[in-house]
Image 1 (spheres, rainbow, N blue to C red):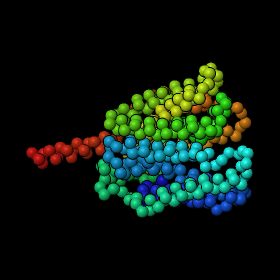
Image 2: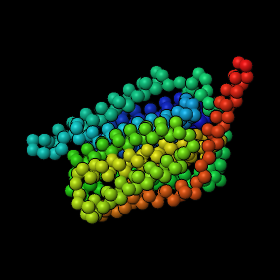
Image 3: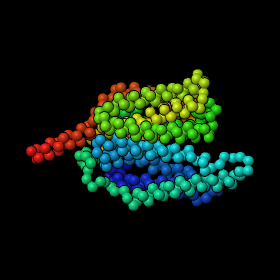
Image 4: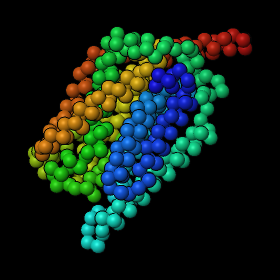
Length: 369
């Protein structure tokens, strides 16, 4: 992100797309189990480098390319596309057959390689699209703040360390987003507790991811149109998410008799309400941090999110019945509401843009008169 801020947004997108392509390409060389396992780890590292930017770049793209009343929506589009990629992950069983009568390990190995070719083809198409057309910036700045010179990356980091309000939002984002988003990837562990297995878990995950993407876009668009209510909206969304995850805890513990319909609704509702708060949290963080560059704020959000996700996934290395996962999920969504109570919502960046718009409108009116 430091290089992206210094050398331009196009470079960051190109590096990101190249890393994703390289990460998927190395898995296509051979199906030999030992070599393939090593190459999968190499590919995972390359993809994780790219992920550092895919979570940070949407806020930067929104700031460079979009006017103030479209920035949250633009950030939401970037976030929901990441989420839809997660839904595609659960499509694997549609290509790779499960072990069964008449299906040999060689058959399954061939199916896995087919899936790898599909991933690589999609990544190649994305890289080609970026190379052919992704300008560094629009022909004219969409707002006054998008055109102004920003502080350096390192000075931005120092400013974050001194901004208590921003640190609170960073903490809320890290825990309320960091746990649920990676939980979707290990959802099967939680659903095994109530005898829901891989095929049904795939359906629950895909519905949850698709609904959360739609919810994020709708809430972001409404928030763009209703200026000045970020904190209240985020708290309301997290409360709704916490209610759904509490429902899921009661199902998991047997307090409520489990049913697949209830699992679908509670999981999809919890993930959707939580994910809808993500673009709003990013926007609030950028507003509180201004004039800290969006690239710096995005990098800080990504760094802290990954730390929380790493700790959460690391706990799965401890053998257990995974009942604790539901409680952690509920806690991370509900308890993060408390720090938000102490955040004073300000709109430094938007106010600077709106003042300029008002000034230009006044000048135009005077000229006409």
